[in-house]
Structure formats: structure tokens, C-alpha cells
Image 1 (tube, rainbow, N blue to C red):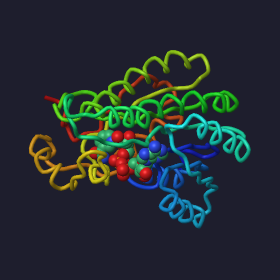
Image 2 (image 1 turned 90 degrees about the horizontal axis):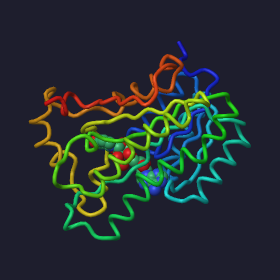
Image 3 (image 1 turned 30 degrees about the vertical axis):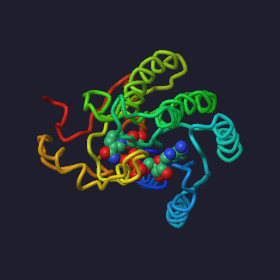
Image 4 (image 1 turned 45 degrees about the vertical axis):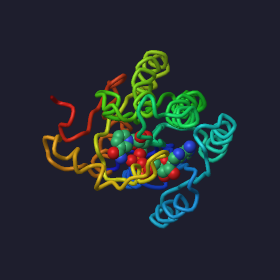
Length: 254
Ligand code: NAD
């Protein structure tokens, strides 16, 4: 079954991690894709794999924090596909400093990518969704929007902001048949902790303590989040908006 036949999906941060997993899964399910990332080298590899399987793919170098670049992405998307049905605001960066330790530079950088990037994505892609008669926006937050850790002031602020931004957008765009939902991944095996802005760390070290408090006693795989995004992208979720899908192995139950 192709659950995304005739749909055009735009996924940010698709060069690796969960964005890549979503791009590959959405392609298998029949979607055409616009994939974007600051890392154009890896993005091109993902694009050529998908093109080899017959998927129509537009790969664009794109910094989600830039309004000018979002305008260009929207223009290219319109030129190539004429519409966008699904937007996954996935691109994000991590930082592990507490309130006192966080510098102005880190604070502004994390907010500009995670929070401003998500807002800009909705602002510039919604007009293309209206042309399609509706659409589905999936904003990637984090369990760090649901629990405090004492260690990631800027990152947690942005993920909390994405949570409420999605809810207000869900109300704003309901009249346009555009649904806005949020996914809250727990600890997922990607490289994000290795590329943390302030304290690069290895995923295994960072997650070994976390695994102890996750009821399922393991970290998740990118594909396990991608399946949640697939449901929200497809028409199977046609009455679901403003929803919060937590995919965390039970981490936030207690
Ligand atoms: P990742 O580092 O593997 O992938 C993130 C991708 O985003 C990379 O390809 C990177 O180049 C790209 N990116 C970074 N800054 C960008 C920018 N300014 N513009 C465009 N692209 C940019 O990380 P991931 O774990 O796959 O993260 C995906 C999303 O999931 C992020 O929003 C992250 O905050 C969120 N998340 C991750 C975890 C986890 O445990 N991995 C948990 C909760 C939430």
C-alpha cells in the first residue's frame, strides 16, 4: 500500500538521522520529496539513492534559520511541484548547557535554528498547502519539552516553544484544512549529541544514564519516529490536529 501517493512532502534536516529515515520511508510510500539540509554532501547521497528507486526528489541546500532561504525553497518547491502537501520541520541542533553556562551566542543560535526555523517553515509553506487544498505539518519537538533536565536551557526552551507554536498554528490553519501536529521523540540513535554546539559528546555516553530511566530500557531507532510521522503525513490522520505524539519508550510516563 502506498500511503502517500500523489503527495509532495518537504522534510528539513533530511541529510541524516530522523529526517533521512522519514525521507526514505515517505518515498517508499509513494511521496515526491523536497529534502533540505545545510549538509548538502550527505543530502545529495540521500537524494540520489531515492532517485535511483524512481522517486521524484528536489534536494536543496538550506539553512532553516534564514528567511531568505525559506523564500527560495518555497519558490523552488512551487516551480517543481506546484504544491506541498506535507511539511516536516525536523532540522534541529542540540546544546547541553544550563541557564548560567549558556552564552548569548549559543542561545541565539539554538533559537534561530530550532524555533525560528519551525515558524518560518510554516509561514512560507502554508501558502503552497492552500494551493493543494490542505496539508499536514509535523513539527519535531522533543521529550525535553515535557520534562526538565537542568542541563539544556536553550534547547529545552526551543522545544517547549515548538509545542505551543504547533497548537496555536493548528487552530489558525484548521479553516484551511491544514493540520498541525507535534512529535516528541525520546532518546533516538542519531548523531545529534555528537554535534552538540557547546559540548560534543558521544551518543553512547550520553544515553547510558538515560537508558536506565527509560521503561523499555533501550534507545529508539529513527525509523520508529518516522512511522509516527508517516501516520501524521497520511490521510489516515485526517481528523487529527494539535495532537502530541510522544515516541519515547515510556521515558515520560512517570
Ligand atoms: P541529526 O543531527 O542526526 O540530524 C539533524 C539534521 O539537521 C542534520 O542533517 C543537520 O545537518 C541538519 N541541520 C542542522 N542545522 C540545520 C539548519 N540550520 N538548517 C537545515 N538543516 C540543519 O539529528 P536528529 O536526532 O535526527 O534530529 C532531528 C530532530 O529531532 C531535531 O529537531 C532534534 O532536536 C529532534 N530530536 C532528536 C532526538 C534524539 O535523541 N536524536 C530526541 C528528541 C528530538
